[in-house]
Image (tube, rainbow, N blue to C red; front, side, top):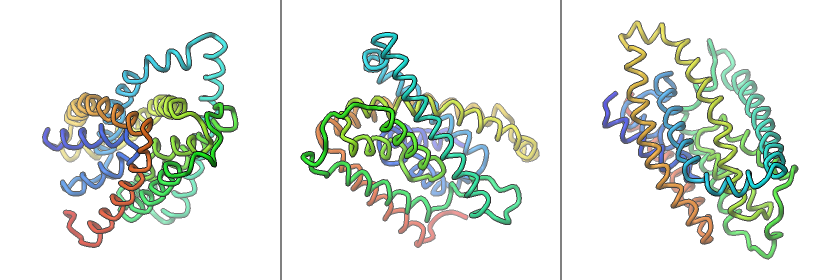
Length: 290
């Protein structure tokens, strides 16, 4: 893989991951346009490393806010830990359940079925973009008089946000940040609070995903080695991509916060719907390299 391709994918990932428009959908389409296989372990590793870069961008961008929000006192800290843990447990339970169901039924009869096999399915990506686009639109356009303003982020709300995040995991195109922030907005939670909470969940969720994909890559390394691909050759471009995705991620977070606070959240929903249409057009036009 050339460094130019890594740069393009890192730029797309860094911007789209932290905007509610599904980075995975955009990266997968870009990979296909460049003749890359999104389901290959090498590409999955690159995507995960790009996620790592955006994870560090999240920590960098939100750290000052999190110190006030989650670390103001011992009591506040442990209450925050309880809410984040509850949401993460539900995310894991629902995500793993969906993974098992998809591998058992959607991939029935496929040898060595893994959920990553559906990641490159453009029809599924397009439908997922439609679903999250509608959710973002509803949250963004809902008249505020029908919502209870600035509701506290309690245990039930945290669990619901975590459950929605779990639904996002198997489906490329169903934006995690878009779905979780929109859910919080529909629950009447204050915008900055739900933004802080959504990205705190993302930071907790990312390391296990990275570990899983590294193990998956190592498992597939024997096959990769037969094609002359070394571990250094796999990790070096991914590390470069991680640094680039960090830079673009910080810029994207500034954009997201501005639009969320200024009442332009719904515009991300419109974009997702347009992106879905674009994916459908590209799929039916059959312009992707084979």
